[in-house]
Amino acid sequence: MFGQLGYLISESFRGWKQHRTVILPSLLTIFLCSLLLAASFTALGVSFKLISAEKSLYVIEAFLNDHVPADSVAAIQTRLEHTRHVESVSFVSADSALADFRNHFSPDMLELVEGNPIPAFFRVSLRSEARNPQDLSEVRHAIAEESYFEEVQAPIEWATRIATWKFKMIFWPVCISILLLIALSLIICNSVRLSLLSRKLLVENMKYAGGSYMFIEFPFVLEGAAQGFVGSGVAIILLGLVIKSIVQTFPIAASGVTYFGIVALFTVLLETTLAGYFSFRTVRSFLFEKKGEQE
Image (cartoon, rainbow, N blue to C red):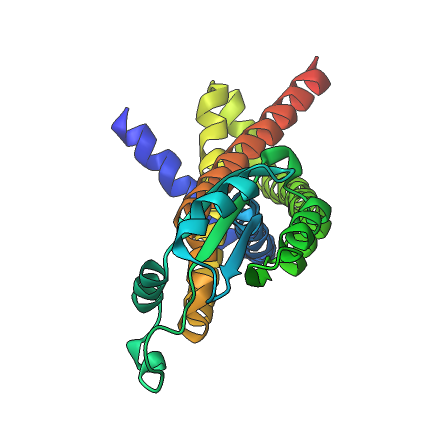
């Protein structure tokens, strides 16, 4: 049994050398498609990351004037909580705001400023059904009309951009991924079929000698799976180096590619599995065709 297995494995890799004029172009094409597919999956992951963070955009920060007395904070908060589309309101004191600023930014930024330059403010969150740019702008405008607020901020521009591009950010990567998977399937099928035709005599002799379908199919399936693994593996390594370089140049991009490891593993496993499966289907169809011709 182990002798047969060793023969089948060696036969599958012998085809790489004997039929390199077929294998190498196929391997190169698989590599390019894999690179684009992994990049598309990465873009899809970044899109989901942005969409999951969209909730944090629908928050309004209303900064109090300096002359507003402390005993009015509770009344102002109650008034904000009864504003249309508002889900929750939290008060952030000036000391808490300063401590939060120091946790996220360098203390050197406040060296030339005396005292605490950050005023107390209210953080207003919108309800889920009101998380759209129009309602965000409406609530911001309503709060800004109150005289006890010095400044009212809301990321309306970013919310508008994500709302506009949300569908496209999901639709195009999915479409490109599906087209690339179809292209990869056709490339692998064509490569295996050309390899079969070049070894037609060997396959027929193995069949006449009593070789089972599994015995005949195994070298081709292993050969196809190896092409998928090598092509996708090299593509993932190259894409990983590119992403690493981008993250080193722009550290802020690191949060968007946190799922690259999962994307890399999924891409390699998917393409290896697809390559093995379509190799199996191609060889099985070829054997059935020959069986029909003989009958």
